[in-house]
Amino acid sequence: MTFLRQALSASAGLGLLVAALPAAAEETITILHTNDFHSRFEPISKYDSGCSAEDNAEGKCFGGYARLVTAIADARSRNPNALLVDGGDQFQGSLFYTYYKGKAAAEMMNTLKYDGMTVGNHEFDDGPEVLAGFMSAVGFPVLMSNADVSKEPALADILKKSTVITKGNTKIGLIGLTPEDTNELASPGKNITFSDPVAAVQAEVDRLTAEGVDKIVVMSHSGYNVDLMVAEKTTGVDVIVGGHSNTLLSNTNEKAKGPYPTMVGDTAVVQAYAYGKYLGELSVTFDDAGVITDASGEPLLIDGEVVEDADTVARVAEMAEPLDEIRSKVVAVSAAVIEGNRDVCRVQECEMGNLIADAMLDRVADQGISIALMNSGGIRASMDEGEVTMGEVLTVLPFQNTLSTFQLSGADVVAALENGVSQVEEVKGRFPQVAGVKFTWDPSQPANEGRVQSVMVKDGDDWVAIDEGAMYGVVSNNYVRGGGDGYSVFAENAVNAYDFGPDLDVVLADYMAAQGAFEPMLEGRITAK
Figure 1: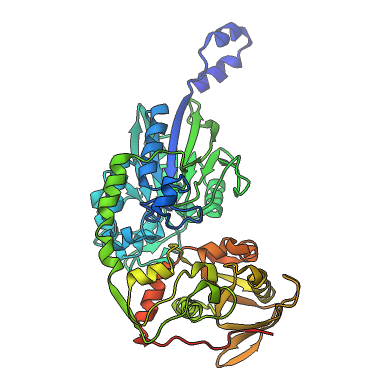
Figure 2 (figure 1 turned 180 degrees about the horizontal axis):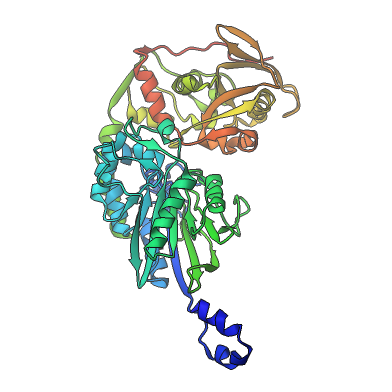
């Protein structure tokens, strides 16, 4: 049709005939999308952590499967043939994954009738076998284009690179994309090799277009920057539904990293933050050649205004019952009470702070990390002497935070410590508990104007003055790394940040278990003049 119209236009004597031709047929599809759900079956707080039943009843919570059921049903009522896809990392992040692995996620995603999903790095946290079990339980394709799984028996015959689905009368090609460094981020095993995302996507686009499919959606768990690169360096990709970097794209939210969608040539790139807090809704219009002529939308905030589906509330509550067994499980032993009282930990070095910081640093020390910083606001309780249950660990660390690793200059480490001691008078949660570093501060000085007097870092068995021009490997939690508790220096200046490490509560439990009868201690890590 396009070629005929062009040919007729070239003939001056056929102008009336050209005018009489019908306009090119346009087609619009709606893409609903989630990413980085991380097992948040129940509602979350504004800090992306657990939310109490009382706060939920007052409308202060976000997300949860029961609200997603309502939001997706509402979106489908407006767009009956809407495509629903996920950008990966359904696994890991709460006791629902710890207990059920992929089974509970499979059940809920089937309930929501997803059309496709890509493999996130956390889908490999418990090896290929758990991923294979999840794939066998879901009623939709799970895809990964940039990896060779032919030598992995659990996945070789089931994990495809791409597929074609039909919505209404429209054929849509779906392609999966996974972080190229997944072998460093998770446990895919030695039988899987990962490859360049651009070449992998282009190969699948070429294959699909050769089959006559001209509407291509890439489900990418590779991060916003990689998605932009893939959009720029490939041809034929219409939409990239992203994940991994937990990026909020929006045209109205001032905290957004970019517009929704971000257009790179004719390719629309979208992402909807994480944890089920938003549902992406993108409307895409194509001309008769399959080229996007319009792409618009906005992530929908799944807040307290979204009514929870009653059947889903009941089912999630039923699935939560066995989790009490985990909460009562003995995971360690303490030789004495471990002081974690907020009135202590938010103004000075405390035993629980040392324990948590040591556990964090121990977990990632082999990654070139030498400094740990934990905000005291994340420490919610002390521990009694004797057996320590997982419930006690979760009482101390209830926020479902993950480890975040990054590099930071020595000057920025000092700036972070300045922020940490800036509101001691108000007993604020930003007070830092540390490992691998010790510092002296003067509370008589004005806040953020030189309270931190000296900073020493560990150099082998010795302590040396921090080099403000050098780069240091730092571990914290994802809340603080994202700028929480005033740590904007982490959000703005961190290099090579990775915010999706293991859960902090699991890190603490594992560390304590390895210590035998844990002996709490203070070491003079933080000294006030």
